[in-house]
Image 1 (tube, rainbow, N blue to C red):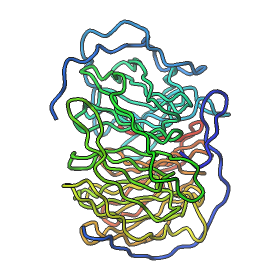
Image 2 (cartoon, rainbow, N blue to C red):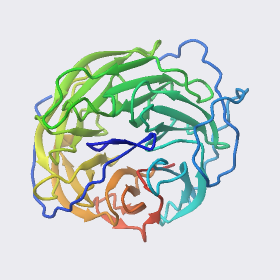
Image 3 (cartoon, rainbow, N blue to C red):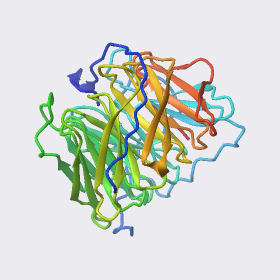
Length: 422
């Protein structure tokens, strides 16, 4: 979540930032060297099935009878046919959406076609899909934070659960498919929920608040911004913007409880926001929102500890451009960073088996305030959700050079803050 979130209209919205910076630089930095399922799950609660439609947003439904059989996986579209695309928004924001946006995209051209809205999901600002492709999960970014599960076969809401904190802004699924991980920005905490055989969520099994170290310069409290699993599956890592820290935990596979095993601090005031791992699993890249930098990190799978390297340029000039999210291609050759203030995507060459980033250029994002970026499953398209302009830009990714080419006019989507192509 952006610094300076405010409660508004019973929900949570993000303070809008102004400014565009220019210029590029080249910086190279090297960091320091470097489960079984538990007992029978609770039957899922299901909401009333409804066809895609638009309308007034409503609270997620959680009181309908439980489903009796696991839903079949959503049918996979042919490579040449349309693929599903889900869009996150704020339902409580002015001119925001009314639920999860439904669309399709052409994997060859990148063209997006709208298909209505799944209402009944409040402030779904970040989305994730289960590894089996059957269930979609959304945060409910409100003061009384929650997470909602949606069965994709019939787009039926399976219910919502409290995250035990305020303003959850990130959600991910553990590779085992048995645990949902969420980050509560407002309360500076992370939560774990069990996922049953139907994809529905149980009550949280643990909530951990980042009570130390003290907040960094300019911060008043912790702000957990991301909660993800390491490539080896041995640790889950929480990125906290408020405390300038990445926390590493062991996730107990039978109980879903967290034990902190390591923590790594950025330089004071960096404001770390988003972490992504190199496919090799020994390095990761950290986007720092507040001081407008990125850093290469060495990861030790034995201890879960990150060794955070020197801060590097985003190529956007002096001042801050609110770096948002960083991605790495599946072949580990290139990385891309979304810069909200500069309205650009920075391209880096990844070198030394992941140990170095070399800044190549910045590309206009063709939108305003790119909040989140992601690849299509085949890695040939990059989607950018532009919050202020209410658009989703799509780029073709050259797998050889890493160059980005805009794929037509951006798609209009109200307060677009997340795009999830399947």
